[in-house]
Length: 286
Image (cartoon, rainbow, N blue to C red; front, side, top):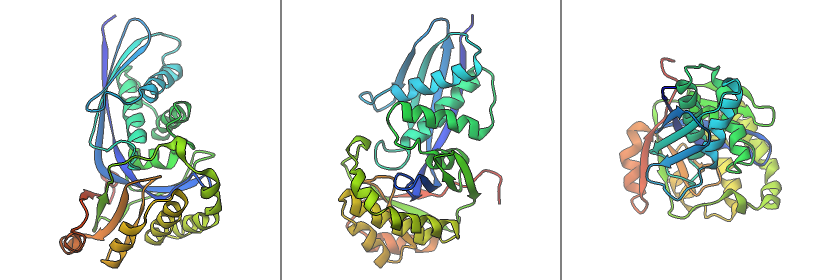
């Protein structure tokens, strides 16, 4: 058989409400890109190259390919060569795993000449993430935001998309990314459970359209539960950010700032290295 090659892409996202506490979450798309290529040939097994990250686990990539093959390859076996490259920092809370899973699923489908409903493709990746133990809930909210762009609100337990709308495009996102990482296996479940009532309040703010308050409240809740210093969030709010909070389980902090205030804001926050990123909304959707 001839080798079959496919490509896929997805993007990063940031947390509005983290779903770990309550099983429901909200997130919005960021213009940070992840690309994958998948080449299928005779044989079986999966080999993975992650450009710039040779030491990272490849289990997620393997499970994504296997998930697609189980779904659409009708029992045929293939050897898959996967290569990914990404602008998204790994294990910082900016949804690198969700974006990688989406991109690999799409590239595998492309190699097979198959198409799939967007949310069905996302669900293959979220199940792979649980199986690979890179996510607790499957992160359906994150995966939807990465794949669809805009703001999403989801029930991760039923994998249902509750709300999908544009995030305001008159803002920029400033991100502070500490050097350390927070691995999912180390999360203090009892401490997270203790703030679940406040996280639920943040979720209801998001449902009611008050995404900025939701993001800030959620960030303060999870920073407290995880023992992370909220100083950057507070400084950002003091200097005019519309919202600021921990993304995912961190350690990255995202700050939402009106576009024409960014220069003034970054000067006021000059003690911190900040990455400026555009919001990513669905293409062709006003």
